[in-house]
Length: 507
Image 1 (tube, rainbow, N blue to C red):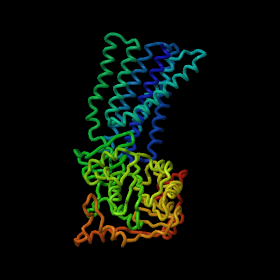
Image 2: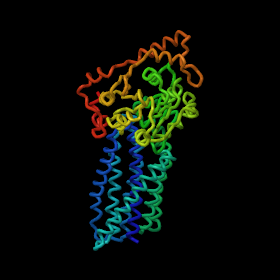
Image 3: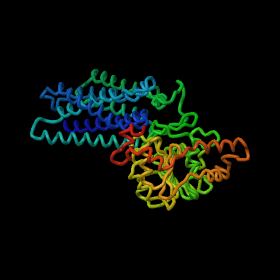
Image 4: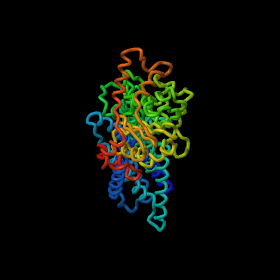
């Protein structure tokens, strides 16, 4: 019975701790816009806390008669309660501090919370394992139970709950699970009568207060986590989509942030071009007949809407890793028709994995790549990825992607393809000669319609002037010039992960 109770306790605490860690990572990643350093820093703070808590628990492990002593469970209950409270408060505190200073000292509270949890395991081991020849075997059982609980936390919270619940509700549920665990430990710890009632009421009150305060503590949670936005105190996002793939937020003016990083604006307007959507229209200048196009990344849907309505495009395949973007697209009239366009096929998958599993070839492959400094960006910028894309191009095909200012990504593409040109911050590369044909682009723009409405009415002097302004904004640079200018710039590979770990290369 004693060992069974110990197994249950370490299993539950393992579930709670890994669940909180997933929520912490989501919030910290949002604050930093997806910085690759976040996970390592979070894990470091978490493990440091566990180490300190485990070491400090030695004070309570000096009693050799602790095995099977139910009174010992009261110490464990106290640590579980404190760990749960601190773990719950990490997220509201992070939002509160970010609003005021843009910093995120939540790592300290994470370490403190994990220190409480770190103390639980040795205390439970001291209580549940007899000092006999089977001590080592029974300790391995405890580790296994803790791992099972941790795996369940990762799976249930990371893959199930985050898909159906916002982060604030999950935090409240974890607080309730921890509170129930504390009350059970107190009851099993021999606390009786008024003492049990008082202790239980205290634990329940702390848990209940935290749960009841959840709406207030998480008020405008993601607005506070986005330091780049100068929100007024009562400003709110127009939309917030949370699922297991990430967090997508939309401001009142249609600006989209995916995981805390700028993702563009929901706009296809070339007259009032707030998001430089002219770059999507520019595919006409790069390929004479882009009939079959692959787009890696749906995001706001703006690029997909422009390309899908190109007069020469016959089919557009879109690969998007986060299905939450579909929920946004269907809500905004500028791009909603994309979902019912017979030329468009949207696939929910990782772009690189999809390319690896399919052998279809395209006239153009377009990638509205995320910022090069974000976690996992190497997967879409490396030499290996360029070679994978190259294998999916038809003769004369063009790969057109956003370098987001990365000189290494620009050079990598120019080296891996025989021909290329830079168009503002984008690179267009091919195995066949490629030029930026402005006259062809102007001719196509004369017949460009989206949802039956002309993009520009060239009979109007103002629209003709706007077209010329758009053409002039498309600054270009040839491949030879780029390679000379970036002669000493290294290439991006899957192994060196330059965009993520060596940002100075891109300055």
